[in-house]
Image 1 (cartoon, rainbow, N blue to C red):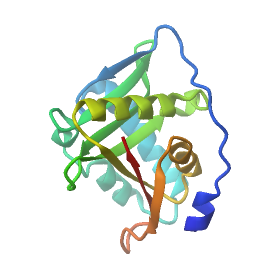
Image 2 (cartoon, helix red, strand yellow):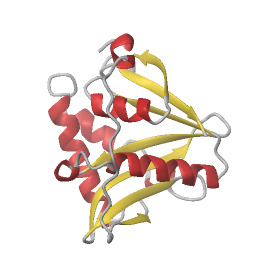
Image 3 (cartoon, one colour):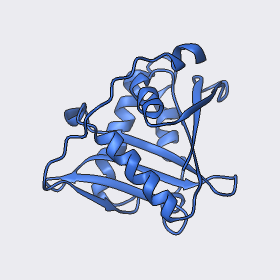
Image 4 (tube, rainbow, N blue to C red):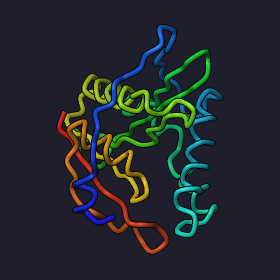
Length: 179
């Protein structure tokens, strides 16, 4: 997908589907409740990027950031629980630029997609980032994740550029949003 294609992704606003017992909670990334997030993300990346990234590289990506990177006072790790199980989540950490946070690992369970859960996570992460004093969000996503590109574009993120992350990585897209 070229930058022009990323810009023209068809977007349809998604209604946020809520269940009265859904709970948003902040945890550490090594909390057992977060395990499904990492397992499903690894599976998702393996499926979408088969032939581009090997499974060892995917495992390294999932372990690239220490738990502390997404911990207070500069980061957060958010889960949406339904019936006690994590069905969506995301995290953020301090970025090198002052006032900027980087969102990572935004995810919704395969069984619970098309309910606006990733959008709900995105909105809560943005609100929490503001509470911590951040004024800008930076994030990246891959070329085989059109749903993520659409999510970011429909929620006010600006596509900065297509980006080459290196020889062993597929190209990706960089986004930002001022809060």
